[in-house]
Length: 219
Image (cartoon, rainbow, N blue to C red; front, side, top):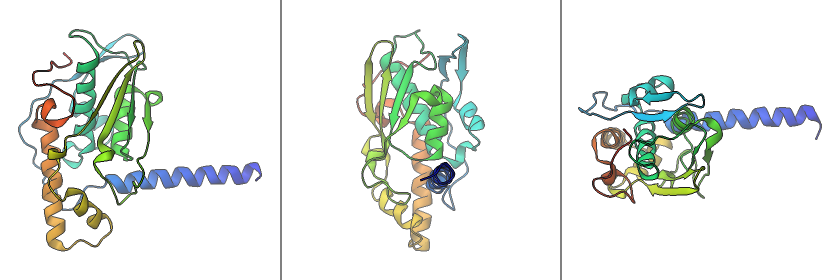
């Protein structure tokens, strides 16, 4: 294969990946725009120049081009990153961008952009579980591994099953496959809004495996 053909293949692959992410992350019709009352402390992390950043979830949504009500991924990635920092660092100790890495399994633009913004692109690795497609997701797509590179410490977690209503992933597949009935579309939009809201209001130990009640936060 000559260089020109290789270039065309790479361009096509990039286009397919981008299209895949866009389809995965599209907001279902009928999603509730109103957000619950929530209060989330910011993520504190040093940039590579040594300045301490104070990143709110609103900052994350704005920086990655999404309204907060439109997305499950931004609240999920914000909360799991904040939780991982609380597990890997002592109170009053903050990571530096470039030092904390994540391996994640959710092939959406929301996850990719959020982790890249919080931790830098070089520190974020996507590994797709077997069977994942733009239409078919499972709980395996909500598993995360954070590595503190200066000490080698690792924190593995996944979203607890009870965060997702029964039948959530079946309904999602029907909606993405365009086989859902109007009632199923409406039910999925409701479930999707409820999941988003849980990531905004629930305690970390109710959202993620391996987190004890009373775990301190990154502040």
